Image (cartoon, rainbow, N blue to C red; front, side):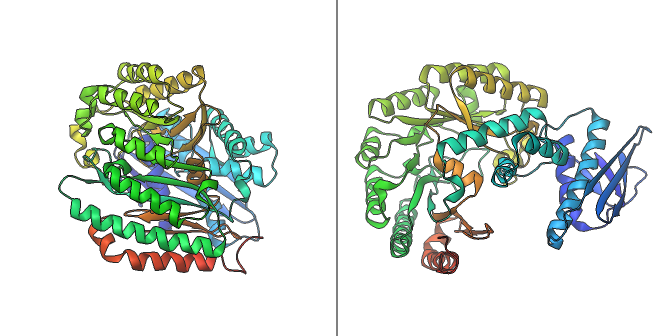
Length: 503
């Protein structure tokens, strides 16, 4: 779909114009000038004083015409960046409206293309805006539908029930520990995940660097008197390493981190069932870790083969029962909607198999074509469901979870996600992952340790977020972990200085 845009020369509009076009069309090309061969041309006009007024006229090659206008009072006394954000949202508003009217396709998330929509509602709660008014503002400003606003409200209510001090946790931190190894790499994956076979030298060197980071960061936290809210072992697959290596890693955590027994939650992703053994489960039990993920993704064997997961459906079920028998009482499982070759029958089957296990939490992902994944680079090989069927699968997940006593407690979205939908974490009440809430709502600093681990430093006073990432490949990490650790400690010293730390 070739789209000619007239009247918006500022390059800062380019990305939102492209992202919104992608919601409607599989392949779209934005041209910032008139082109008589364009499938559609959209002419914008804008007036800015104390209000921003934007109008748009869409004309298709076949002669169909659609128009829209939007006016919004500008907030005064804000930065130039914030002023432009208001103008950009007004442009997006009319752009989305004409494309919806032209295609007949309603975008339930409106103009939002970001990862964390629930942050918008949290902000309104913190500002003391009444619920009905907050909902109306979300509808008016972003064109979000009632269905998605109600989902956001459910999640915000649940999060504040689980973490009542969510808005005052800036004086604590959470820790993410990245283990960059997996048995094989899945076709949809862009996480740092290297096939572990034949890499023992890399694993040994990596673990040496990780232990160093844990010691140094742990000592800094002890010196500053800063508590840890949650610890999350992700990756890759943290259970790819040996039981002995896991044992030494958790011992390091207890030795290095302050007040480990007071940490609210420690999670270890054991996502790949083919990495789970009774010896590894014994290690988890020894260190009082009972929240794990065992991720089937699908209960159709052909699908697992197509996406590069070398475990069987039976293995997933067997390892779940083994974990249960060995005392794991908070197990999460992931399912993915829209995997290659899967439609409503296959997803219905996955939910039926889930019903036999009833994990404490279930995260329902919608497939996203991530830019660097094998699936995206060879997209013609992977046939996925149409938008309407993907929406039906998501609706089925919502009904199924509600019928089985699960409640939604966190949500995030991704670029190029099928059907412009979302990923939702459901759980039984009081079995939610606090870490998932912390990473999504960005209310506190999360320190990333290990290969590919991203740190997110949240200023305790201003809320400004600084991102910092460790290298993704083990060799670069092994060569530079000391320098990266020092860099993180410098940032932490600035954030949690006497002057900057909260009372």
